[in-house]
Amino acid sequence: MAYLINLVNFKDKRGNLTVLDNTEALLPFKIKRVFYIYGVDESIRGGHRHIHTTQAAICIKGSCVVTNDDGQKKESFLLDDPSKCLVLETKDWHQMREFTPDAILLVFASTFFDESDYIFEPYPPRP
Image (cartoon, rainbow, N blue to C red):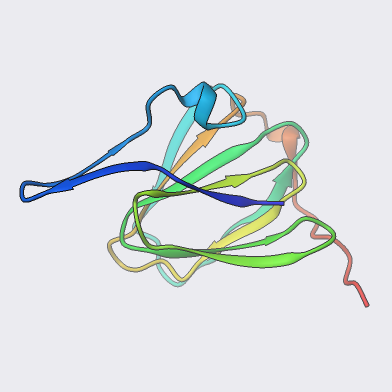
């Protein structure tokens, strides 16, 4: 199931500094790809899970909601602070929605892009 990590954040009168240091100890994978999503209208992004890829998402500006279904449990996560990092495991069928106009969602991935790694079908409804 997806879970949140609180990143190290330093605040003082000059502003904030959030650190992703020693990412192999912080994240459950070595980062192989980085991408970001921004300028999103009312659209829903994502709508898939992966065969091999684990991801970590940080909304570095603005906010968005990530809904997640791991086949057993459905949950929503509000990413509204750049010190929150959401880890999405391979089994996590996820959608990103409710982006604020200024939102920038930064994503780290454990694999290079491979179209065959995507599973677009959601889990079947449960009783």
